Each structure stands twice: as structure tokens, then as C-alpha cells.
Amino acid sequence: MTTIAAAAQRLKGQLPDLISPALIDALLQKMSHRFRRRMLTPVLVIQLLVLRVLWANTAYAHLPHLAQCAFTPSAFCQALARLPLELLQGLLTAVGQSVDRTAPTAADLFAGHRVLLVDGLCVSMPDTPALAAQYGYAAGQKPGLGFPVAKLLLLLDLSTGLIRRVLTKPYRTHELSQAHQLHPELRAGDILVGDRAYCSFGHLALLLARQCHGLFRAHQRALWNFAQRVRNSSTSLQARIVQSLGHDDRLVVYRKPKARPAWLTPEAYAALPDEITLRELRYRVVQKGFRSRRVMLATTLLDPAKYTRLELARLYGLRWQIETQFCHLKSTLGMAVLKGKSVAIIEREILAYVLVYNLVAREIRGAAARQNVAPDRISFIDAVRWLLAGMRTGVTLRRNPPRPGRFEPRARKRRMINYPYMTRPRETMRKEMVEISKKASMLT
Image 1 (cartoon, rainbow, N blue to C red):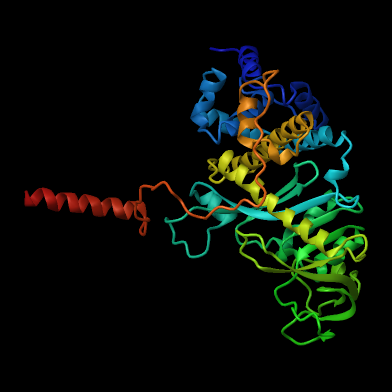
Image 2: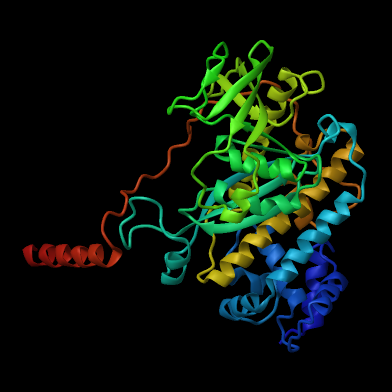
């Protein structure tokens, strides 16, 4: 049987030393975590977990071949479930600190502010009773015909490309009810950018209390008529227009709603101010390939001289970058369908994906600096392959060509094999097939 040292040495040759064993041991000692000297030590489990994600969500049965050790997939899952979540969180923090040591350039900031993007995505997982009870199904799913779905809320640092925080919640959870849990990651002066799901009085007031800023697409109930002076009807937000700042640009006072949001405690809601002053602006999208043609924003950045309407429109356009990173997570790394069958394994899989994504983003940032190009010019999948190849010196990561204004039709060229959707439980369909087979044999 292969020894622990031999397996770790083999993995070290295949996987670059991105996660230092000394760092893992230091974090374990800090948490006072004790473990028996098994074959699957925490260092080996984390190394295999990183390799598994880099191999695009490969099967757990593949891990013994990668490590060249004799263990079963069940043994690895048991070792993974014993791994403290605090250890993975500590590794995420360490990767972020290693990137933060380099001072951000002016191109990384917006008018001197750090910009963070917030949005949610959904991931599927095996249909087990434990996962179904924890995360729930999508709407309209009949028992036995669907898969549990978890909703993830991610905070992406636009200046570094790192995911600063991830929250895992049941599918039927509104993103706004969890957004305030991301606020401890913000610093004074940061700008949080998101879609209209995060544009509410309570959320914006909490950001102002932290001396942070928000830039969100305006709520769908906000009036588009910029010539109107007052809007107090029941069909719009309770607000008062106080000053025009120019064409399609104005200052508005939002009033505190009488109804308290369920995600805020009575004490926290009572501490909010009765009114907050915001800025509303509107612009048109003329670039092809975008669904929205007119966009209205609400922000706490009130100075029209320092934050012009066009610059704020450009900043909100960068929000789409989080969708690109979601594509890297779900398609390139294979996060769209998780493979764990228990809540403990799912939680650790999600943190492992975020950890690997941050490791790749860190290497992309370094390669972009060496080649004097923007980080989005470096190929994400090429960086993954480079990591798997052992980060060979002298190899330059591939640069994507600049394609400004590029847009593509949302259509598939390659034809897929079309199977009918399952409309009845598998056991029922299997029995029906057996009955049909018996009747066919009797006729012959």
C-alpha cells in the first residue's frame, strides 16, 4: 500500500504548491483541530480536492488514480466530511491576503474606490432526502422528477478578481434577505454594484451606515418620468425629487417604508434613518447584443462632478463581468452539478470551487501583470491547464485577442441528442417498460 509521504510527494509533483502544507498545519493548530494519522490526512484531502476541481468536477472514483493510493470514494467522502469548514475559510482568507499585499493600481479602482459585485447563482445536486430537505426543489418539480437546487450569493472583488465571500442558502431564498451578511467584507468607501434585486431602502441605508456606497439598477416601481417633481402614489416608491443634476440625472429623497422587511430585526429597522438621499440617473444602451435598451440606476454617489452619469453607466456595465465568472465556475470548472450526497460534502465542495477559482484568478492576475495586459485578456481555461501541468517556468499563458463590441447569437450550432424529459418517477417508468416487454414477447 502506498504511504502517505509517497502519495503527498507524488501529488506535489503533479499539483503546484498553491496550498502550502505548512499553512494547512498552521491553520489546524490555530483551530486546535486534532486528527488521527490516517492515510487521508487533511493536507492530502485538500490537495485531492483542489485537483478534483481542476479536473472539471471529476468523479470521486478518479481520486485514487490521481493520488495513486488505495482508498475508496466512500473513505474520501468521510475524510472530507471531517474536514473543518473553518480550515477552507482560512485558506480562502490566506489567498486573498496574498493578493492584497500588492497595491492596487488606478485601473483597478473607480475614482479611488474599490468596487465589489454581488449576485446569486444556482447549482444542482443529487436527489437525496437530506439535500432535498436542506435546499429544496425548483418551482413546479414533482417528487422523484427533479433535483435539489442551492442558491449561492457571491461577492466578487472587481479590482483583484477574487471571490471574497460565498453564502449557501436554500433555493427559495431571496438574495436581498442575505445581502447584509456580506457587508462585513466591505471597507469604508467601497462601492457595491448589483442588479435591481438589491435596490431597497433598508439595504442602501445599511450601506450608508458603514460609509459604503451602492450602485444598483433602480427598482421596477421607480418612475421613469424625470420631469415629474413628486411621486407619492401607491404604484411607485415613496420618494421626493429634490434637485435636477442635468439630463436624465436627479437627486431623490427615499422615505423609510412603514412595513419592515422580514430580513431586518425590529431593532435594526428602528435604527435606520427616516430618509436617505440618493441619486437616480438614466441612460440608453446602443450596443448590440444587450437585451435592455434603457437602464435606470439608483446610487449613493451624489457628486455629479466626481461621478459623471456616463462613468456610472460604464461602471454598471462592468457588472456583467460577474456573469462571466459564473460561467467559469459552472462550465469551465464544472460547478453546475455538484456530486456530494450529503449537506456536509456539498458545503465543502462549494468552498473548494471558490478556493480553486481564487487560485486561478491569482495566477491570472500575475500573468497579466507580467505581460502588461488586462486580466480579462488571459484565458481562464488555459490558466487551469497550466496549473495542472505544474506551472512550468518559461510558459506564457495564452492571451485572448481584444474583441470590443463583440456579441454572439444565443443559439447552438451543434445538434444534441434529444431524449424526452422524465415525466414520471424512474421506478414507474421501469415497470412500464417491463410490462411492454412482456406483452411484446407474448405476441411473438
